[in-house]
Structure formats: structure tokens, C-alpha cells
Length: 105
Image 1 (cartoon, one colour):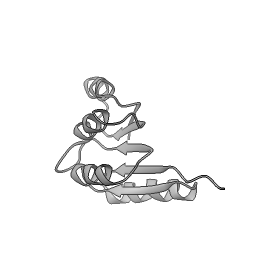
Image 2 (cartoon, helix red, strand yellow):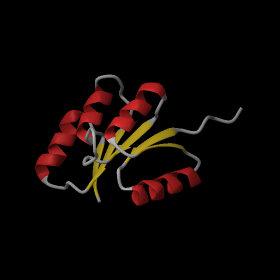
Image 3 (cartoon, rainbow, N blue to C red):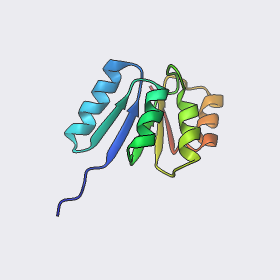
Image 4 (cartoon, rainbow, N blue to C red):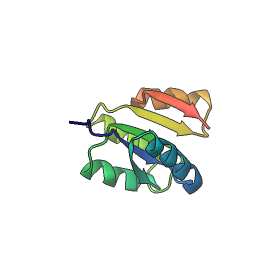
């Protein structure tokens, strides 16, 4: 029996970037769930099993740091923060909240 594709949540408010990442991951065989803001990401996480979360920090309604905190209170899924915030304080904060990787755009 073939294995089920991994489910990846992409939470990014910039539609063009979100769509690009989703297209690339889908082409590689992953199932992608998309959120345009932090609240939508939380809604998805509450109702859907996810194997990996890729989170922007600067999103409306609830930022990526809050989503990271929420995930870590409930799960050990890998979290990649993908953001324009590249200063040391933000990077340290992301890792302190439980992110597994922090990539600047």
C-alpha cells in the first residue's frame, strides 16, 4: 500500500509567495494546506493533522510567533519560520519558542 503524502501547512499572507511554495511542494508529492493569516493557520491546525508547518512571522490577526507557541503547547511537529525578520533578536525568539529552523526571505 502506498504511503500517505506528508501534509504541510504554509501560513503566509503574501499570496504570490504562498502559492509558489505550495506549487513546489505539491509537485514533489506533498499535500499542502494554505493559510493567509495566523488565525486561519490556527483554525487549520485545530481540525487537520499536519506533519510540518512553514510559518511567516508578520501575518494579520495572529503572528507566526503566536502560532509557533500554540503548536508547541500541543505538538512536536517540525516548524520552519520563513520570514523577512532576520535580526538576531527575532531569530533567537523563534528558536526559544520551539521553531526547528528559521529562514530569512
